[in-house]
Length: 353
Image (tube, rainbow, N blue to C red; front, side, top):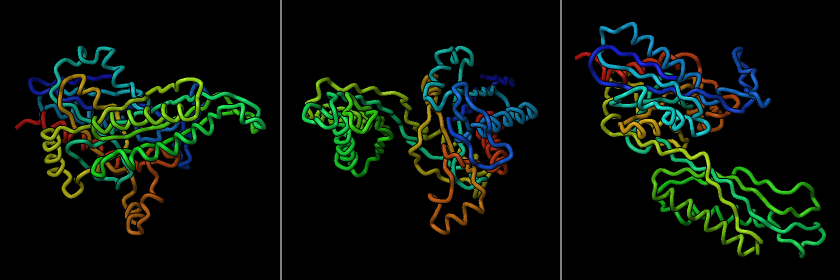
């Protein structure tokens, strides 16, 4: 969904909010907790704060629409679906977003994070990681569990691959670079005394530059194929890359301009955002439109709750993070801060001198 608010001559500013949910059963205990299920019967929850993003952008548009004397130009409000499946931004571009919105000078977006509510944080350069998910199928030769000599065991093969993959970051990525490699699932077999014909390994990679990204992905495929050869696998492995997220690499000039506006408006509540290992597909939109962009974080955790956890050195243990069944940004000051941040950022281009 796209809304265009034209208000005379001036820059074209695009603000984007993502809107979708996750297959998580909410356990926040809140009166407004999600109780819905998807068409497939899975539970669904706004476990990443996308409902916050949508409300903030709606509020920002409403405020700017009521204050036309304070700015000039065109505001483009993009409500993007399917960020969680990494294809929503591309789908909007494929559906003709560029022809719909016309010229755009700058694109911006924000995300609620497990930081103190009321704070706003920016960062120049690589901010959110690029992400790649892989589905690897390795093939063996099934047999009775009592006759392993007749089998090529894909379970053992998959286990060796998982162990060897731990060396990719430890031994193939330079200490000054950053990469995360997580094996999230191994699926094989149906019964304790049956050696299956295949095993499926699902894994995820996070990186901050294309050189490291390519190096890690190449290393994964090299290790998988080598272990298959070492195990005498009867067929080549199948390696499928899916859910690919781009690097979010904030433009320096745009970010500095937004950061200055945030400092003027928020004072000490504005700060520098630490590099995040989460991923987003927002940057596909400005890259597709050929415009510079920036992406910032707003806090969503009750400040006192965060302070107590921080002083005890237990933020990681006591503060729910995005995608958790207990992730629940406090309504205020989160919504006011997110709405103000979008308005302030937009006015950094649209405001009358």
